[in-house]
Amino acid sequence: MYRTALEKLYRWKESRHRKPLIIEGARQVGKTWLMKEFGRKAYADTVYINFDANSVMAELFASDLDTNRLILGLELYVGRKIDPENTLLIFDEIQEVPRALSSLKYFYEDAPQYQIVCAGSLPGIALHEGTSFPVGKVDFLKLYPLSFREFLMAAGQESFAELLARRDYPMIASFRQAYIDALRQYYFIGGMPEAVQSFVEDKDFNEVRAIQKRILAAYEQDFSKHAPNSTVPKIRMVWNSIPSQLAKENKKFVYGLVREGGRAKEYETAILWLCDCGLVHRVSRVNAAGIPLKAYEDLKAFKLFMADVGLLGCMAGLHQRTLLEGNRLFTEFKGALTEQYVCQQLQTIPDMGVYYYTNDRGSCEVDFVLDYDGQAVPVEAKAEANLMAKSLRTYRDRFNPSVSVRTSMADYKREEWLVNLPLYTIEEMAEEI
Image (cartoon, rainbow, N blue to C red; front, top):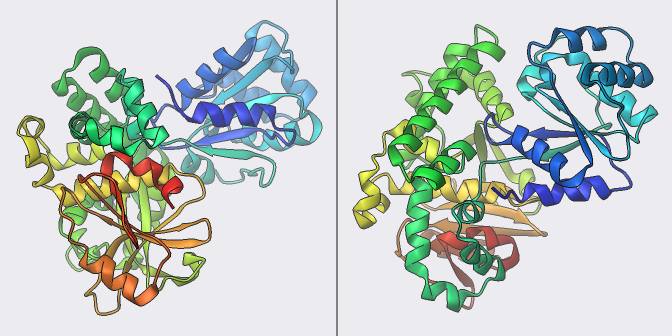
């Protein structure tokens, strides 16, 4: 399948200021596949090293971190010479050998000709005492589940994906039903590569759900593997509360839904851990529309979204029959799915800060406010074609943004102060702004 992150990797390869690259992202979003696919397409040779349960690598990096010695050890391990100009070095599960992470500093300073990409659990890295993180000596790339456009391409609908990229809205409107049908599938399947690949090959929703359950079970195992024992129960409680948090039309995350009488200080570490893992997105409230929005962030009020809409549906027990019963998918659990989907797509757009707005009285709520290109852009997410936008109008009357966006199942339309953007074109948000 095609991932847009490949284009970013090609740019990294050609950069004169290239540093060792760490690919961040939740487990099972396709980091290993992406690194190997990039090596296959862009290099004459690829050296793949998995550090998980690898005693040879643990011993190699346990001694001094002289890059000449390390390269010799890697050559002995793989049984061939490493040509720095034509070889991609892949360090997978790098958190299992913390000194390998520290070595990236020396590769950058002493042997920049070697091209290295890494992946691993960053919480696992951070929790290793004594690990020297190579601050300023590495580049980062965030990898997310497949976006809706990537999902279309994986499903063999490249022409539909290309139409979205061209923003040919009259033509898109002509095929709106095809996009709506694909969006319903995406709401159920999500963007986890294994689930998408299974659906493309077998069209079996039951198998997709089984895969999602296995992914969720693996995440739960990771809690115990990487997090401190005292924090694990709280991580599980926060994690399991997310579907009900999103379903209750709350203006913010409510600790009382995690546990009756729950307080912020009990769960701060657990929430931070889930965010660092890439398993959840924390979207903070802002109480004004100044730029940068981060200056107006209310650190006590936030919402938590999951990394993937399909996993949210799995945790919530969303049944596949909703796909076969038309708009029922968009009336049951509709607000949660729609906001989750919109948030998930917005996260993939580089340099876009994502927040939400409520006024102090709580009488006006805007689902998202985006910090992009020197603007604060309010976005209202509607599950169907409902074009009422009372809160958006109230926000506009107070802050007078240069553009406001309402996204729904209705067709594209640009009005005097408002852009109506179909949900299935949400990835074009940056260009619309």
